[in-house]
Image (cartoon, rainbow, N blue to C red):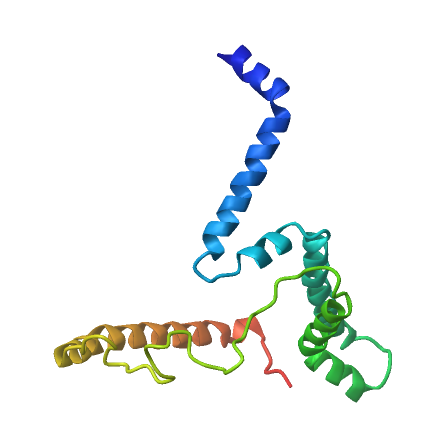
Length: 179
């Protein structure tokens, strides 16, 4: 049985690759058939450098934001400029990587598709989702029944916060309030 497997893998490696590619194409077609983008999905499936550019964008965003935060405590530029760069580091990094993605438009990177008339995802409902239920109303007793677990969770979180604060504010810790 192991010799049959090795014979199959050695002799039919091209057939195996063809089967893999066709199954991938079938998967993409099945995914997109309900939307109607079959042709675009096949064209965008095998774009070169998509993974590389996506990786560069992800790590670039993180590194720029991180180093702008670290730059806040350096001795370069003035204090207000450093503080502004540190505060808006995430926004600056996001905008710079989006700009890089727009500039490098030859490489396909999946982006968020927004419909031309900005509408809710389901045409069956409006912008406001009724908290009492869409298809059937929520029973009134359920609202009051949910109050007991909600109150218990409130007590738990409140006590956790207060106990943590008491532990941290002991004199032995010699903590000082910041700012």
